[in-house]
Image (cartoon, rainbow, N blue to C red; front, top):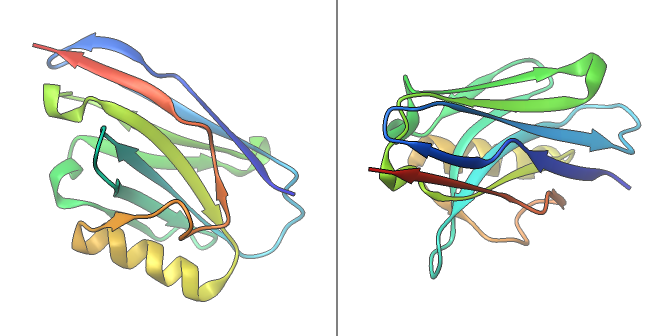
Length: 135
């Protein structure tokens, strides 16, 4: 059973930076994809960025050039470097992981189209970490 745990959230001012981490445990190998999502009260989870086993990366338009997704396979950790933060980036940020190919295509499509995900779309989710950007 894969478990994900996010960390690195906090409060910053407009223009600041944060790096989120998502530590994965229980991973037994094989192809996968992972992604970052964020959610504000009353809304679904926005798909922000995704990366797969082959290193293919996709970004939502609104975060391109500001956010960078990366992974350290040796540490089983996913990262999201967030620069030039804006108040509208305030949200709870989640990481997700998936091993099934159709669901990985769904994740990538959601990111590319700027769509949202439901909590049942992917097999594994972290508990979330709060990011607050003040003006």
